[in-house]
Amino acid sequence: MELESADLVGAAWLARRFGVGCVAPMAVVSRIGGRRATRIEGDATLETHVERMRPVPSLRGHLVFHLKHEVPHLELLARVFEACDPQELIDWIQAEPTGRYARRAGFLCEFLTGRELPRSTAVGGAYVDVLDDALLVTATPDQAVMNPRWRVRDNLPGTRAFCPVVRRTGTAAPGITLDVAGLVRALQSEFGDDLLTRSAVWMTLRESRASFAIEGEADKTDRIQRFADVLARHAGRGASPLVPASLAQLQAAILGPRTALRTFGLRRSPVFVGEFVRRQEVVHYVAPPPQDVEDMLRGLQTFLDRTRGQSPVMRAAVASFGFVFIRPLADGNGRVHRFLIHDVLRRDGALETPMIVPVSALISANPGERRAYDAALDAFSAPLVRLLAGHYEFSATATLHADGVASNFVCHRDDLARPAWRYPDLGAQVGYLAGVLERTLREDMPEESRYLRAHARARVAIKEIIEMPDVQADRVIRSVLATDGHLSAALAAEVPALLDGATWASVAAAVLGAFADVGHSTHDR
Image 1 (cartoon, rainbow, N blue to C red):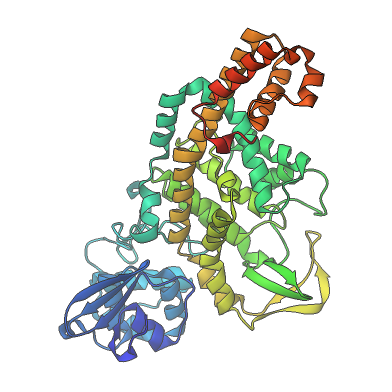
Image 2 (image 1 turned 120 degrees about the vertical axis):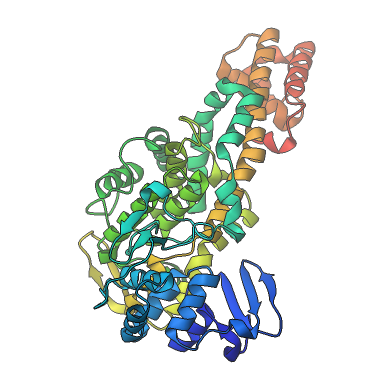
């Protein structure tokens, strides 16, 4: 939105006044105009207010406007509080010790900067929430903490080190309201528990194979099986995978014994995501420095603790995408990222063991789905890399770090990126995961279940015509579907009894009949 700077108020005024740029987009951009109006552009809202709403041109005036009329922007506030003269804030609090916006601003300044504001006047007034839970995902009410210093209810869902932001409107809204458990119950009603349970093994293996396909390693059979086993045995069970000791065990189970890492667990080396193009490194994402990782993981776990009982889809999205943006491991981050989706959904009761929702299978299904997944990652990573442009380099020599990783990547301005790393807006990622889960449960899994049901019927039908082992019957089914009912030479050589015309005609008709209500896209398996 191109606007005249003289007309801007609230967050946009603060950004201009203190010269700060943000990775997270502004949910609301406010200005003063001729008449009151609201215009929605994508996931942002342009609010035009009349002249009488113009605040006093000061930190105090525009902070009040932001907290009162807009969606609080934690990354912006963190940058503003670092850049402003704290005396302006102190004078405001001294003048309004019972003011709800002064107290909220004082608390947020200390929370976001880690510095205590000197104060000679005790604050008063009724306790107020730090964040409006109608606008943002906040801590579940019984998890809010009374803060007597500022007489506020601290309902922030995370910690200073990591407090992801999810708006309740816009892109994230479908994720907050999506009822995964209800969609699963609909599947159970149509196909029955027995079929869904029997299909869980196949779906787990399919999910593992697709997860590796996303990473360009679809031919790694042993790794695919190992990740499938991890999904089956560990998702939703035991201690939280975000606890460092549990995370190290999970990483070891996923990577297996053949790895260049010296130790499993939290990385001790810098990480970037990129590719080598025409003899040059292209950086797509820069991860937080290793010294920040443990505190950030604690913040992510705090988010899960403090939002317990809220939307499983929202929590799964924040856990999985929050994890992959922290990138706490030297290797295996992508697989743990996708593991966490299933882990949170199971722990929250949206999925029951052994059910798996093969989201990776949908992501890797076609180039369009893969581009959508990349776009969900780029929504955060691309503006972060733009912010850091010119502040990272590849040195002439690599440094061998304590985790066995040799790296020549150096970022010189972690401080510039830190507010973005700590307070990411994950609304786009919540909306994206909701879409993937809904399409998987409404389209992909019913199709899969119909195929498995038809396959079971075809087996029974074949054996009523001619006895054979299940493995051989499966080959007959695949051959019939692949040839549209024609007997192949290879199958005839394997099962000579099928050379009898009447027998083959009966077998082919039985198989094709069993699959009559199954779409052609499911035949190729």
